[in-house]
Each structure stands twice: as structure tokens, then as C-alpha cells.
Amino acid sequence: MRWLSSSPLSLFSNDLAIDLGTANSLVFCKGLGIVVREPSIIAVNRKTGGVVAVGDPAKAMLGRTPSNIILIRPLKDGVIADIEYTEKMLASFIKRAHKRSVGVRPRIAIGVSSEITQVEKRAVRDSATNAKAAEVYLVEQSMMAAIGAGLPISEPTGSMVLDIGGGTSDVAVISMAGIVCSKMVRVAGNQMDEAVSQYIKRKYNLLVGERTAEEIKIKIGSAFPLDVERTMEIKGRDLVEGIPKSITISDKEIREALAEPIAAIIEAVRTVLDQTPPELAADLVDRGIVLTGGGALLEGLDTRLREEIGLPVSIADEPLTSAVMGTGKVLADFDLLARVSLGG
Image 1 (cartoon, rainbow, N blue to C red):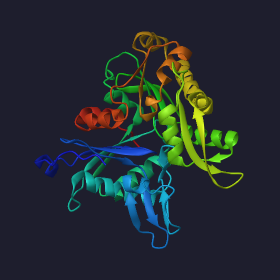
Image 2: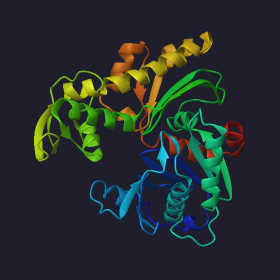
Image 3: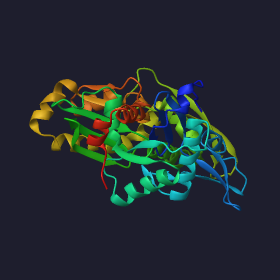
């Protein structure tokens, strides 16, 4: 976990911005910056129901837990799948953000998908409220990512952002602090990891774990052919003989494995462009598309989009933190927060 140095401001800066992601959650504390950056995972004792670990310590247990310990990802595809454990995870992150638990009732802004349902909104609000939030504001993830990336969202010109997280990819065209058109697909980093795992299983009869699949994607995964071939030795369990086995796999194979999820994300971008008014579409010819989220770091994705879409494509300076930093900026500007927060 990443902690900032202790400061007297922590006693007074209760407002929090939270990027509650399927794969990772980040917490921004007003006056301090990002104070929590951890996996959205919780370890639970199956017999007692008690929480064993949250975040990094829980992720370290992947594939290594005894039968009485289960690992739960309380968010799935960008929405809350388990309210009880989301509340416990949020409460833990809030406590860590303030380094204390007594008397803390922060005002919280949380980024959510542009296509969130009323039921899902209620689940997010209830989880934050039950985790001792005084006020809860829901803001659209793509809008927050655009603000965090430094796009001029309040101007009467078109800006386009593609935010690729762990469970969902959100693409939106923004103008005058409003989302003109948007599209969310439940295809992102986690689905890419699963695609890698399934490809290796089909081709080599080798079973690899979730952490290994993610590591393969990060080290040799790409969306566009590389200048120099890369290979990686991976270890797993042979499904035929049932024994440990190692193989060497290439970047070309992983690109093939990732073809379907990448195509789905590109199609979402095309859909939004088709819905964009001509005047704003003209702005995008110069401004192009800005990539945010962890998925923006997939090598060659910007080049692939540029080739397929025909618009300029750039990656935000800090793609992993764009959404939470944008939410933090909005939290400090109440007028803007009132304009962009979701009702319901």
C-alpha cells in the first residue's frame, strides 16, 4: 500500500474521493493526495465470516489459501456484487485514509460507470453510508478520468476519453461539463487476463493462475505488433498429466489471445463516434482520444486505436490515477460537483 507522510492536515481533511474499481481501489484525501492504492479484494474466514485481510495482504494470498479462507472480489464488472463485503472493504480503506476510525464521517465522492442502474446506484450509496460516510456523491467515471487527465471539460468543445479499468471500459464524448454520448462495455483488464488464461489452456493444456495471467499480459502483452519479438517462460499445471510444467510463450500468441477483448473496446469507441454530433466530431479530429485507466498501459493500444479509428490517440500522464485525481478536483469545487454528480 502507498502511504503519504503524516501531516496535521489529516486531522481536518475528511473529504475523500474514491475510485472504487473492480481490480483496484484508490482513495484521495483532500489536502493529502492519494493515500490508499490497493487491490479490491478481501480475505474472509469461511467459518466465522470475519475479515482476515483487505487489499494487498489479501491479494498476496491468491492461490495460496487454506480451505477455511476464501478470497472475495466484492465488485464485479464495475458494479457491487456483494454489498456486505464492499461495505467492509470501504470501511477499511476509509479508516486507513484517515489513520483513525473514531469520529470520522467524511464527505465522499465515488466514480461510477456511465450506465449504472438505479439499483446499482443505491448499492454504492448504501455501502458508503454504512461505512460511515456523512454525504455520498456519485460521479461518472469517464467524466472524472477526463478531468484528471486535464481535458477542458467545461468548454463548449468536444473531448473524448476512453477509460479502461479492471471490469469495464467507459468511453465518452464530453462538452460543457456534460457527457454528450457514452458507452460502457464489461470488457477490460480482468477480461484480458481471462482471455490469456483460456488461450494457454486451449493451446497448451496448461492451467495458469490469475496472477500469472496478469503478469503475462503486463510483460509481453500488446495490441499492435512489436518491433522486437518478446518471449516469456511461464509455469503452470499440465491438465493432462496433472504435474507442474513450464513453457515459453511469445508476444504474438498473447496478441492473438487479446484480440477479442481489444476488438470489443474498439467497437465501443466506434459506437460513440457514430453518435457524436458533427460539430463535436470535428473537434475530435484535432483533439483525438485520451486513454486512461490501467488498460491504457497495454503496449501498442494507442497505436492500434490510431490505425483503426483514424484519430489522434494519446495516453494520460498518469492513467492509473486519472479518475481518482479528477474526483478529488471535483470534490474541491462544490459548484462543479453539483453540476456533474448523478441523482437518484
